[in-house]
Image (cartoon, rainbow, N blue to C red; front, side, top):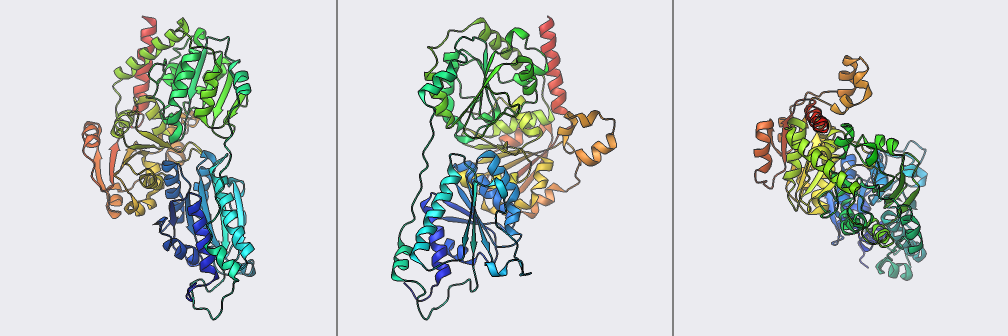
Length: 579
């Protein structure tokens, strides 16, 4: 032991070491004083990579992007007071979408609480029920028992972050001054405590739950006698692509067509199954006759984004089976069975419990014919503006890129218009709490956690909402392109009942909220290249070779252009049905 040390430093080093032992590789830090012991321990830990982000809100979203793209827990560190409160939106998204995040907040000791001490608030249970575990670590102690417990507590919290219900965990660490290492006249710990400092922390490996064969047979019996079924795959995380083979086998054995949303990771992964990529369009066009309504629906992942999905469920009144990695994704509350656990494993078990593959039937062939008609209508609709941007942005996400899709209109435009991209391109989305916040920061984090190029398709309000995160563009580890669709505000509201309320001025002022920002100056201020394009130039710009520097491709799109193209496709479908 060196004389230039103290209890805080050793305590913090053991805490940071426990993160490493638990599999954390990236930590995002914001500057502050009370977190000094944690930051210095992080700086001395060669096995961790630190990323410094000034704004705590952006920092948490960068960490969220790292974890989302890597599939591994990422950590974020902040000082005391209001600093960790800025994590809240990212914490909620991590909780709702099941992304493992370790929140490590520094805090003041108990004697500073409720005494008007600067930068001191009550941080206990700051994030309420949005975290899987909260632990108040208290102030460092010099006993061997405390040292052993520190490693175990951090390991257990990490295990809770990773499953069986992944999400954020919050560790609150209290430190008294002096915070920096100092020379000591005597050692405040025993030899036993010193030995424990050097011992590796434990790692907790949680048991994985599996669907057993008896339950699998019971679930499969729900569709055993039905030839009219539909498999719908909603938003799933990146590792959802692992379920491709099991999903294909289940589709073959049931004979059911498959609707895989763009955010499912599986739209291009199914080779032999009857697929219905334009189901939303078919439903809007009322092209699905009653005799094709499913009696059984197998929903995989989160509920589908398509707004017409609820209408289909209302019409069909089908027996619904939900297969999801976590939670109870059943907003209607009428699912017959909800299967929780690893999706690939669950689908494999369900496929094995289903009888041998069924030959094509009139039902599945009718769905195939509908799918061909819808594809023809989409191709003939001559999509422009918002719809064309969605197509081209998806295509720009080459085979080894990550494609981050913003909420509101972009995620729906991609699902409706993008053939979607090559099978190797992963889709990042924020369908947990479905907010527009933090997506610039997450795109940056995705280049770190994913280690490959990122193309982010965002509406201009989403981009501007997180403009402060552009300050962290220097952290990007791979080419990063923001495709920003400027259609004059939040045009998702044009699709909602408020648009027909006869209050156009209020719609514009309080809902659409068009912004007047010099986006080129904003990008230049943070070192990003910027180009403003219209329909004629979008294809050329998005197929141009991407350099190392982040870039912003700003697309001026006519408001309602995607809806106009959809209406043309609906008319084409209706005309064909009458012919």
